[in-house]
Amino acid sequence: MSADQGPAMWRLAGPLTLGEIGRLLAEGRTRAAGGDLRVDLSAVTEADSAALALLLDWLRAARAAGHALTVSGLPAGLESLAALYGIDTLLTTESSSRAPS
Image (cartoon, rainbow, N blue to C red; front, side, top):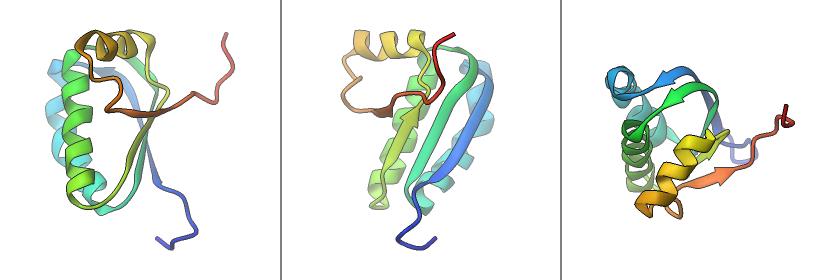
């Protein structure tokens, strides 16, 4: 990726819960370590605290490799959980580009 391109985009869809994150852990680490990454969660249908742990793991991988990880489309419930746990400031988020329905 050249310097003038933005971060790679990875769009996740469906549930992002304890039962689903195991299959995403290694791939997310690899993507985060490979360059700046924007994770789009706007198509996530369900998320729990395991999703936050997953995002924090990917954030650690990105930072360790000297890259940035940005999250967009964070579901409201996940945003509330992050605030409740006091980790909302650790996640760099972008507002969803979708208009409210």
